Image (cartoon, rainbow, N blue to C red; front, side, top):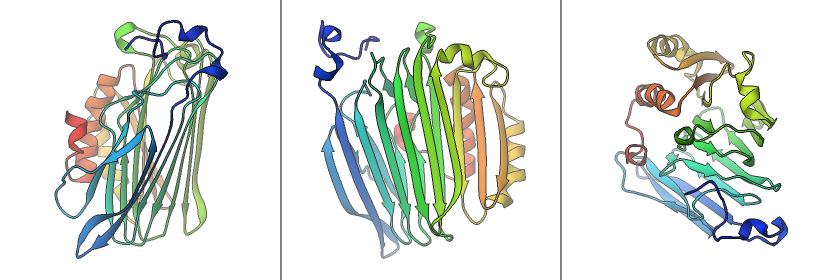
Length: 284
């Protein structure tokens, strides 16, 4: 698809208030029955869908699909995922999500995750690619008890590599909040507004990197895994990575000049860290 976000010629001449917006919502809940995780509730509306390919073991692999074909200016999407007590859920996307250019309106994506006692939830979407002049505000909130396991992985790419694209102007805001037993334990907000490509060149910000990823693991064993994770990261080539751990949280950051280098580092790391293959859509 070309850089234009509009579905027909001449649409860019229309005032933004007159263009059709994509709106979509998915709410999915899974429960544990007889030692296996099973779907309990599925709600879909607009351009968002959820598919449940047959998986192995006692977990459910859920795949989020955006039938709008990407995110354009002013689009609104929301995703709510619940892993009830004892359930195990992995959520992925079938491909990278593209965020097209905007002439002003900001697209929004809100993700809400809930876990029950002894539940496990892995949030593993493939990377988000921002086009020049894209404007996206997204948020992720998670609520979990002490005895649950949450693993989050998100990657973002600024500009299309095939076109050697630079983001001369854009907005990207990424807000994460995690609560355990009702108490806020992790808060992180990343915000770029303006000439993002120039900002990423600064040594204190990106040092020329264009692809970034964050892994957050919240679990009783999170801090105990720090040294083994650092050993794994020390063998990575072509991608900078570092890890830290505190208060039952493990955080890993990746950055690279190209998404290929980041994926080459992150995919084997994720497989080893989780002790199982990534969802099949990652390999298709």
